[in-house]
Amino acid sequence: MQSAELKKTREKRTKSPEQALAALMRLCARAEKSEGDARRLMRSWGLDGQQAEAVLARLVRERFIDDSRYAEAFVREKLRLSGWGAYKIRTALQRKGIRREVIDAALRQIDPSLQGERLVEQLSRKARTVKYTTSYELKTKLIRYGLSLGYDYEAVLDAAAQLVKDTDSCDDF
Image (cartoon, rainbow, N blue to C red; front, side, top):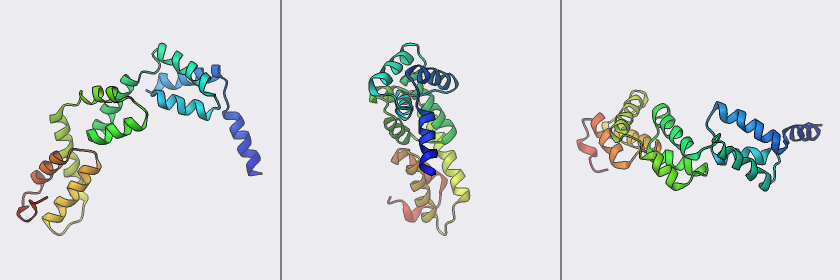
């Protein structure tokens, strides 16, 4: 019984190149998509490589998909809304198949002072919720959290030290 339902679901998801083009145009009109996102969707819809590349070429030509525009929007969103650092943003974009030079160009638009302010804001928010017994433990947890957000080690270390004033015993990080 389950395999029959699964088969129906797969049959419904299969699209012709024209249907895939129309569906992707609708999706791209609502939100930015990368070339990798489009390829992944078309593969799930059963399009072969040649058909998918033809659809993708048309989407790129008509500017429905633009990886540099996507990368810039991604960087703005992850920095502003999610509080991510440059390392984590770079990794996420690489996983999406964005070329290195496009990622570099998008990351160059980040204002370092704005990123530093965002890091301090994230760490101070974390400091209010974390449990600790010593300032050393607090600083360690803040550093770990800042690094997990993808910020530079030196920036995280400075921001954590700024937040945790009594760190005489833990300056040797």
